[in-house]
Length: 157
View 1 (cartoon, rainbow, N blue to C red):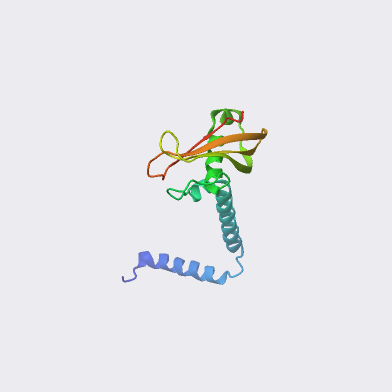
View 2 (view 1 turned 90 degrees about the vertical axis):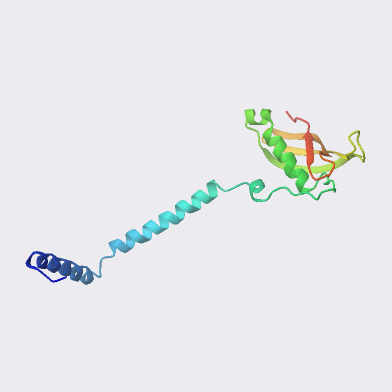
């Protein structure tokens, strides 16, 4: 584009501004603001990840081996019991949560129930924010393929 009289003054101003910006090497303010912005972004992202992190149940689903009844003190049984206790209406209303699950023992085993499935009877200590409670629960298959587990727990309240 040929240079005309109307835009020659504009080009001269742009060249002068460019030269002035190059000459300002001591302008640390922009760098400080950039570093502060990056640090603020990292802190906000970290706080978001800490506050809104998924619970262990969302990250790792409960898996059972089809046909093998889990033991009373096994990880699937403990996670299912925690979910059941925290979902109780009385616990939600009182704001009670499970602090810790103690040791669980098997109190009985029925190899074949009236429905044709096996059932495991368990009991143990549950530590809630409202105190320590003895809880009894049963594990039972809900399907003939033995791939779905039913847990039923006594209300500790």
